[in-house]
Length: 89
Image (cartoon, rainbow, N blue to C red; front, side, top):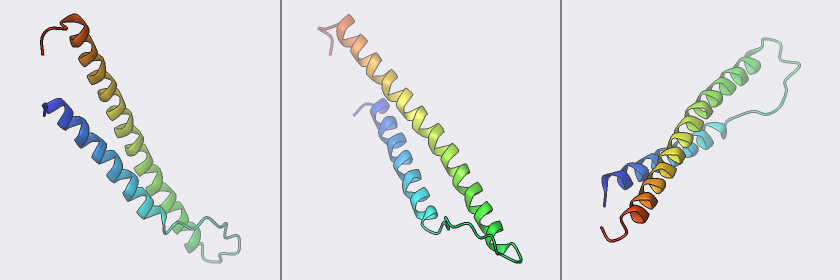
């Protein structure tokens, strides 16, 4: 298997792992608004969870875009090689 395909598969696995990690972290998220929290502890936990999820989302988006761009570039390169030199394998 060519190295470029292995790299694409590895990048795809990283994207899937990040999605699973985000889902695991978000399982403990509290979506309710706590207006009567006297000491503000619940709101602080919610802010920390939101910041953590936002950080994971930024990384996930960047890795997903990089994987998609790499995959499209790999496809374009393969198509160009097949059309430019159809007899060479």
